[in-house]
Amino acid sequence: EAGVVQSPRYKIIEKKQPVAFWCNPISGHNTLYWYRQNLGQGPELLIRYENEEAVDDSQLPKDRFSAERLKGVDSTLKIQPAELGDSAVYLCASSPQGSTGELFFGEGSRLTVL
Amino acid sequence: KQEVTQIPAALSVPEGENLVLNCSFTDSAIYNLQWFRQDPGKGLTSLLLIQSSQREQTSGRLNASLDKSSGRSTLYIAASQPGDSATYLCAVRMVTGGGNKLTFGTGTQLKVEL
Image 1 (cartoon, rainbow over the protein chains, first blue to last red):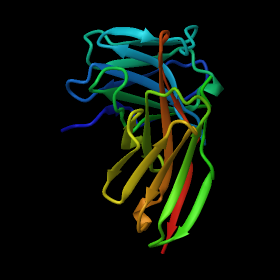
Image 2 (image 1 turned 90 degrees about the horizontal axis):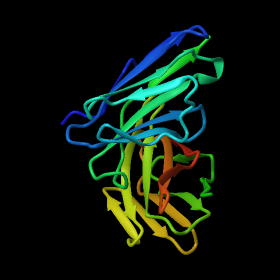
Image 3 (image 1 turned 45 degrees about the vertical axis):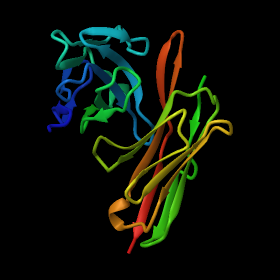
Image 4 (image 1 turned 30 degrees about the vertical axis):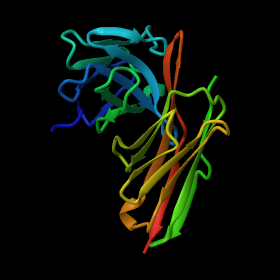
């Protein structure tokens, strides 16, 4: 069974440029998460989806970050414009048992903003 | 606010040694706790999930215990191998009337030396 797939794995951009990350969760997983992980820290939640509905986006910086999960399957996270402080690893995770079950993570997308 | 602490931040042991990684949390009213490993430049791999009603979970050489009342969990690794070298993170889930939240610790970086 395929795991959570993310792309791109690495992205280097200049500040003020836009960037987008894509995630395809494990088949049948209704819950999808986007996390941000800074070096030496644990992941921090940006947004959680139940099917196509964003049920927790309280930590998403909405002035520059946006996300969508149009058909309740794959999802896109966008940053526009990027700032130096956005450099981090963006992790996508999915869960087969609703919002309280075991999480399965993708490999992450490492963003460097110059 | 739930706070999750993992001590030590780094640990180096010789191959073959049994070891214990610690995770402590400030609010004992947790829903479940999950242990992950993270290899450099990779995403998180789920190791064990312990529900709040459970005392321990085992998978191969790994055993995770949970003591809710004292706000502690331990991950025991038997007969450590160089391939166990990674960062180990614990994550605690709280479920309240306002929703649910998963809080990660900052991890213990383990190095198993030949």
